[in-house]
Image (tube, one colour):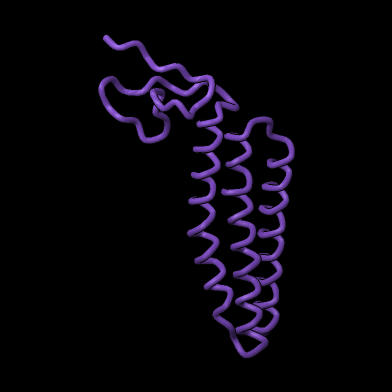
Length: 130
């Protein structure tokens, strides 16, 4: 077994791992019932899956081609934007009240995710002033 065979085995393992993570993330997105549960499958498993596929692509390009750093840029973009978009989706689900009633806000403080005194939030009544 020479170095080329070893690199091909590493690339194949990374591709299989990436495909499995992506498959688990996709199945989780389809099977889980609430928006909050659905957030975890694509943001965790699918991000790792795409990352593994990009690592395999980068290894292949450096081992058998001219080499490319585009995969690193894609991974950085993916790992930066996936948590931010998941955070925004979670905040929208909380504000719309889709899954569960929001927790009570702290007394006499503004709350970062939901202000019950805001008249733009339908179905939420302001707490009684004491």
